[in-house]
Length: 450
Image (cartoon, rainbow, N blue to C red; front, side, top):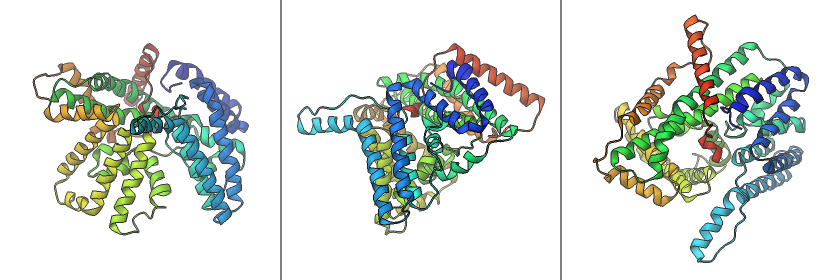
């Protein structure tokens, strides 16, 4: 079920809000059951996996909580992490491993075609972070219902933001929240809905056909790449806006996930602003345990390459994602060693342009289905010629989206003070978005595949 689908907007969301108001004393249980219905709507076959993962982490978390910081606690934490990674590896990576072994050995290595469970990367990471946090001394979940709601809460379940139990646990105890927060939630949800339907999906109609075939010219290749760079940001940030908005409607404040990443002046800054909850997760649970920046400069560079390669692998079970992560790892390592000092000596506008060029080259690897497709697209970008000019109408949505991103900081994340003009504008935006959602086929968010 999609946040912008008619079923969710006109049926499930009103029922959830009404039921939540009636079951305020048992709101956590109600939200948990509603989240399971939401997940069940996608594929009922994988709900037992979500339940099993939740039970596994809750039980092992109890064991870890009994021995925080000790060798026994470390044993249980390590066991839990290994079991989580085994589950993730079987469902997400065994096909990639089998195909790679088949290519390397020339033998047909059998794999199980079980499909990719929705959100498995996200709820696995949250389970791992819970075990590590409890081992480090954080308080464990008081009840299974609270822990299960932390894992399965439907606004963030499918594509984040990645949350941590110590941050959300205090919110389970708050039964009432002001109407101003609910109004903020509605406002934030509608902004995300409009970004998805009016911008991201329109850009997809431009980028998808260009990436599906070899671009006819360099201009067309750059048009497709620009459209995709804007699409993936608007698509993912719109999901985050809707997730945060829905969380506020139900009394939970979820963390922000984006901070105008395309305004970054370096790749290091870009990863502080893009998918911030994933970047923080990688920093706290991978980079710091490897030694972080406290080691020698070569070791720090190696740590950056390792964690970013793993981050690329987290995004998808394909070698283009691994290379995408390695690409960013090398760039971050080079910036750590010397490149960042050089960048700071040039005007800020050139820092922005250099960073955006590198980011867009990375999106080619990210968007292309295979490494061969990525290679063909790179060739089109740099040697595709200028003989074919895309139609003028194809440039219009890209220019509008680019202007929106440039001026997005002027759009407040919280509802502005009341004025008749703003209220009418917000009402018109809401009606247009709902009409589009009702009258068109819903397209999934890009990050649902991870």
